[in-house]
Length: 313
Image 1 (cartoon, rainbow, N blue to C red):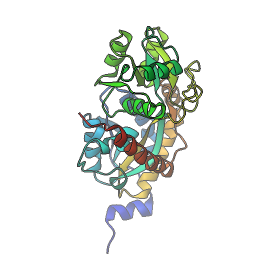
Image 2 (image 1 turned 135 degrees about the vertical axis):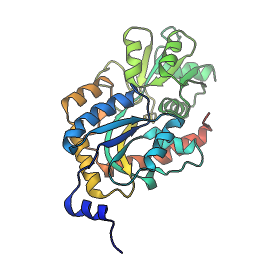
Image 3 (image 1 turned 45 degrees about the vertical axis):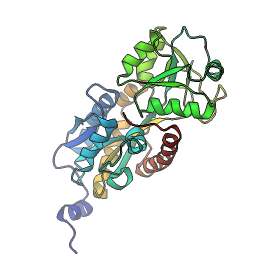
């Protein structure tokens, strides 16, 4: 059986893109994903000898973007901003997806991970995580929390409830800024949210930070203790992301794209920008390590969704 010409060329001579590379991002323009992707893409271009062009596709928990990426030709000219929400959560909320994360995508390189901060209205009677837990146990269902259905925010709160045994009431939001505004106004009690959007509310006193669901304190918010420090074990949940391409893409193409990603993640401008978001960059997380992260995340999220009965809306 003869090898395909494109595959043979890539294997024999190495690989470089022959046209701009399209990076499909499951987030809208000016979103956290979009801003980060555009800067990384800019730094990847010189290594590849071609531009990396961001294409935004939103909707259905990122599954629309993933479906588009999965249909691309396996030639290295399309990459996808995969993350734990699209690959680890969405498949258990949306039935009959036309793709499988491990079957239809090939990992290229890790990008980074971010924890969530529990933020609440400062006028609530509980001022610490342990006070929040005690109040919750005394008033089952009496605390409301915001977030997107099946989002990292949602799953972080569900995991917290699971490990602490408390019961809260979920209030779905499509827009994080609106959720934060309503919490500051006292209409909802709290949210698990990423530092980029929540810290400005904390800094100006509109919200109180109770803890962070990571193993270590954030470099940009050393004053916020981890949940583990406060006696809450097993509530860590990082929202991680990585760069993927279509399965069956020649390995030399994947290797070149990985090289470009590594160079970009070590760029000082990229490091500075992601530091302001509280994101832990992954310049040393290669394809094998990224695949392992997904392998660990899928059963964990599947079990959590099964226990909580979360459904897409």
